[in-house]
Length: 187
Image 1 (cartoon, rainbow, N blue to C red):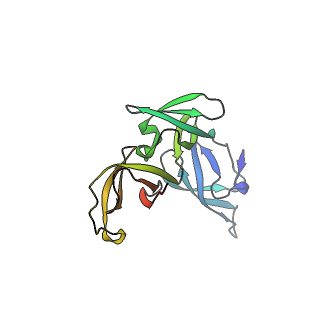
Image 2: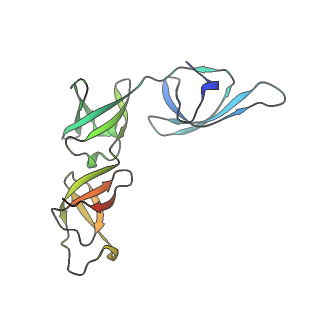
Image 3: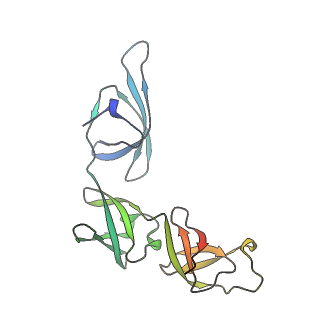
């Protein structure tokens, strides 16, 4: 049980069996009446933000959330198969359960997964991934880094904007948070 006195930014609580994370909170002690806590809560499943007020001392259940590291094995159709690195148990999830950035998943990539009652609600890719360019317009002599960008398809099937001078077969570093080109990887 979590009391309002234990509220901190990022603390997770269960409201009506739904997991929420505290975005902001403020303890208020008015001159007249009982103390209360104003909060902004983010639904961990949907991302919806709510404003709620609670009486001081109110208690909440901790949500049934499991955080684990899984290794991506392969994708088949709309299903993605992962392996738990500790137990070697395999799990298959639908693309809709994993959210965005599934097109940046490369085989053998380790991801952080947050599970609620066994179902994934958040997947965290590594911040940077090295991916090989498999299709892009050819570079032309004279193209420079400051000269603009062009779309490139990487080995996972994702499309990323890259500088004009990049060629097919080169390995690039991509920021998975913004899906932007960072740099060329030299081997």
